[in-house]
Image 1: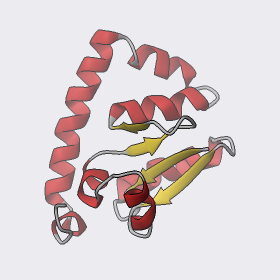
Image 2: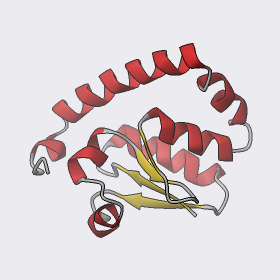
Image 3: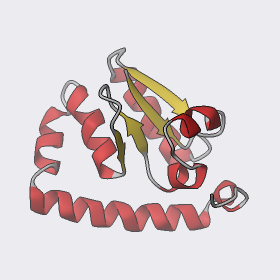
Length: 120
């Protein structure tokens, strides 16, 4: 089972994950960060790290974060596998990682629920 930790208090994140939930196979477990603190600890992921970047744990127990998490998700979704292949190309992946990191930092700084949590 692929375990995906997502920021359920972020409107944009929740919308995207809701879409994935409707098209994803049953091999995913979607864990909201606001209620999944014990699961995060189980995999050594801090709350602040999980709020900054999307995290998931794959079937082999390997933790992925940021763009790598999206790539794992997209590879499992019918119709999204091609996007995963394109996004995995070295230059494309490098660009996407840079843009995602900048967006994630901006989002983390502006959302109030990210500010009230301790940075572990």
